[in-house]
Each structure stands twice: as C-alpha cells, then as structure tokens.
Image (cartoon, rainbow, N blue to C red):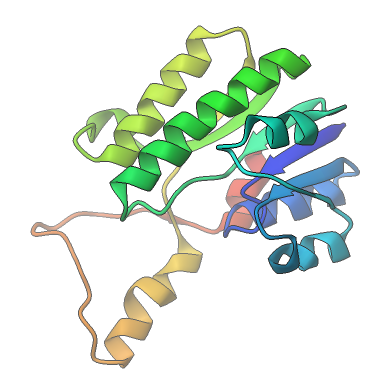
Length: 186
C-alpha cells in the first residue's frame, strides 16, 4: 500500500513510518524541513516538502497515495498554533484527501479528549474525531495516552538539572505507552 505519513519526524510518526516500511508499504512523508528528516530517507521513505497550511503542498503529497496516517500535531503549549495546525491544517488535509480520492485515514488523537474540552488541543482532537466519523472516510482513530519517550525530557532531566517540574494539583494516574507499540496499531 502507498501511505502518506504526516508527522514523520515526531516521536510517534517516525515509529509509524519505520514500521510501515518494515511491513512492506511504500511510505511518503510530508515534512516541513527535509534536512531534518534525512533519517527517514535513509530508512527508505520518500520525502516531500509540505505544510498542513498549504493546500497545494498537500495535494502534491497526496498524489497516488492510498492511505494517510496522520500523526502531526502542534505543541500543546501554544493555543494559536494548535488551532492553526490541528484544526485549519487538518481541514486542509481532509479536503485534499477528498479531492484526491484518498479515503483511508488513520488519525492520532488523545485518550479521553471528549472529557477535557476546556483544553484547546483536546477540544480540537475531539472535534476532528467527530468530523471524520461523520464524513465519508474509512477512518481509524488511535486515541493515544502519554508516551514513555517523553518521560525523560518531561521529568528526569528537569529534576537532575534542578529545574521546575510541572505536575497537576491532584493525584492523577497517567498511563504511558511506548511509541513503538502505538505505531503497531497504525
């Protein structure tokens, strides 16, 4: 299958691209900065420069593709870029998918997004899920939890460097998964 991976340079996206290649799929990754994505090309991915906010680059990236695995997302710390990338950009993506006849979509969302609608990224992920489910796509939604790969940067390094570590005000269990395991479901 010919698969377009979005977010291929990210923590999860790189694992998805690698496992898709290992499974024998032809993988194209749309990236903003090809030089930073050279490792994907070394693995065997085709790279195309693009941006979710540029419909023409999306149309080019989607040419001859059979499926899209969407692991792209903005950093949750900036609500303006979250809205632009995760809503406006995704609308561009799915409109171009319709135009190019790409019906198979795997969308990476967040666990329990519907419960935390006051958080901009969670609200947008939930709304995107609903839009995809109500649309004409053959869609799979991966609702991911926190990634183990983030624990070191999020907690261990700040503690070792005597920096502030932000935690919630209450006792909150957090589930962590390895992105290699999550990628198997894509």
